[in-house]
Image (cartoon, rainbow, N blue to C red; front, side, top):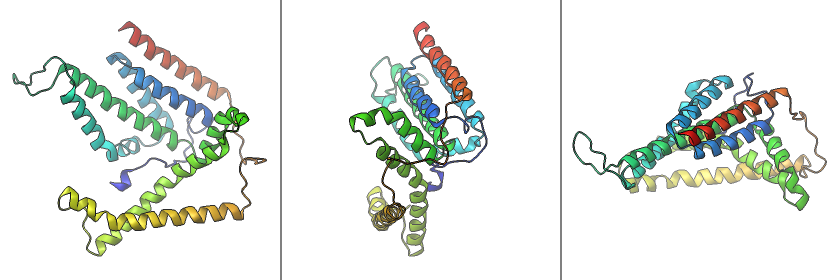
Length: 267
């Protein structure tokens, strides 16, 4: 299960999405989230699904990697759908002529919520798959730069977000090693009641937290030894630039965004 968590990984592939300015991708991702939550009709959801599938193809990242990233949250998606399915009030929906407590409105809400979660995870995966942590940091910092005029620590915030995303795969790998080490010593994480399983996680969590704090301390020492002082006067190896490709991508997405709003308005 831990190996299925792909959030934070970057695939260095030469694709159209990889060559886009990180600011363009971040803004498109934010507007995509808005479009996902604004969509209300079947037609608008079809457009969202087609757009998401097109992004997956353009990124040139194997499609199976996107679906692999859905496995860790599959239980959350199913649980959320079931809650909306049985707890939403409305017209009764009989199954094979029997009433099972499911309503028409509940089925619609459950389908919407499940689709939204899947699209959000795939969209966030597309952003991290096609944008390196350093480029993501520069993009966030550039977007938040106007706030620095009022004393907002834009560089520090962008750096913290980048480090957090970058260390997700590292912590997952560390967790997998600790679990295997504990299992080699006779520990069991898959048997017994839910309380017994939770109790069995304690020997795994303690060394994991110790390892995380040790890595954070090592990173702080490494940054201090390289005279890191923040964003003041900092230069970049690669300056991000807004090109005609970013303009074309922005126009295409705005057309898609307008299409979703138009379909909701018409239907």
